[in-house]
Length: 184
Image 1 (cartoon, rainbow, N blue to C red):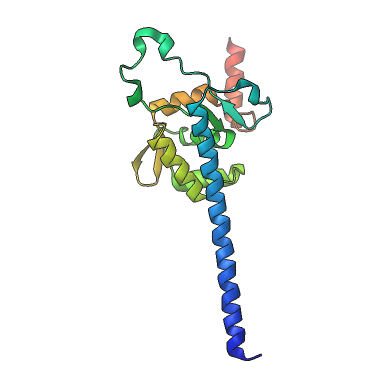
Image 2 (cartoon, rainbow, N blue to C red):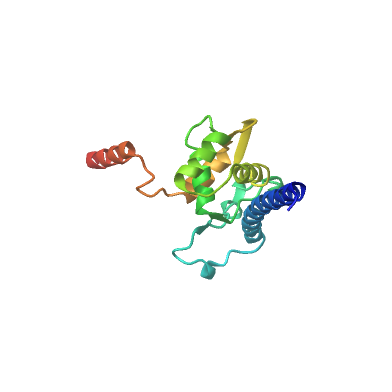
């Protein structure tokens, strides 16, 4: 075969491989968007308690009790962003990690944490996640480009829903908690 044809064939194969990588990337983005859409759909309909299994990887948030509090309800409920009614364990772990320090976390720190924890979230996934949870739910704040921190609303949201397993709690914190329990 002529060398020119060989080069053309190799170039086309290279293009096909590049397209396959792009397809895989876009399929991952679709999965992320579908997960967020499912969370959004749950906000629009009442949560179905029978659909959640005890071992499922998602958590259902308790109903919003602002109406039951009487005078404490905001005057305009539409002005207050709604909360996600369901959130994946991975998303909740990321929110909890962002909220560990008052100053927040950089995008690079969150990506590293995701890799360490095996959460399988790419940099773009985390960036999209952060933007949605900032703009739609008001749980995150971004004081600077690539820096995220929990809002007061986000801190309350995580505090109500996130219960770290013993593997996630640093040994020093476990020891301190045990010492405090001994004092009581």
